[in-house]
Length: 323
Image (cartoon, rainbow, N blue to C red; front, side):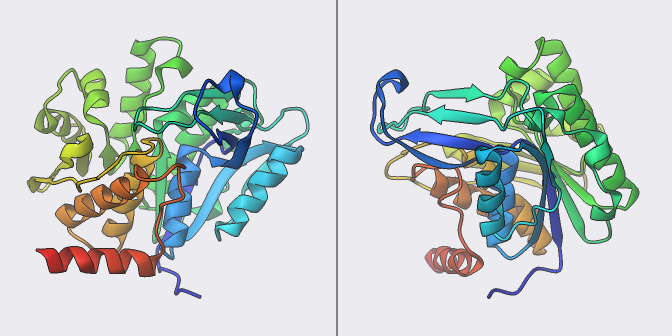
């Protein structure tokens, strides 16, 4: 059994049962699917747990078979599921995902309206989760799912800040979940301004800040009190800048074939957060984020490529030997 990190990791969001088509084609024509676990925040929790961090996940599921599957799948990843509550009146959400072979974005259909997770509220957040050495990770998806979940995320953020916990925020824009773009931008930026580390994509940055220049995007958030911004540049890697003045671009890792891009941003977040909690520099963190993102795009599945600590150590050792 691998040694647990002295740092603890907490996140919240909606976990769903995901059914991935076993063969390419229109979802309406597919008869066979593979069931797995999905959800941006739970993907990050899985990655952190595999690297030895004490991970806790806050969510809500229905009293149904999908809810039971999610609980078991999370527990199997050595993530604490004590904070996953049940709703007797709302069902667990699920999704369908197409099978793509050309590296294009798969077709995804969600069945999450009025789900159990959408009823997660501030009352479901236990203050005892937040103490010295805890890192909280939030995303723009949790802020978008429902007003109650948004309030839960805000409450978690407030509790974390009171205890001097570090906080990261992945902007993760989902316009279809918002009533209008102005509300989305204002709310996402409110969360970002209150966080220590912000992780926008380059296109998201344009929507949120009005600029498509990595440094300008970073400066926008740094001017609002954020300590570090890492802008995802896709295959070009990542640009980072900190409040202390450090900045730079970490090159991306070449990928022979892109299989599935879903989950790459979550893997990137795992790389950034784990490296910083390991005491790495921002440049090293960005490099690890790129590495984990490159692993994920080469497989079919959101979290299947996330490495164990031993595997990560081997990968990073090989990279150092190439330099």
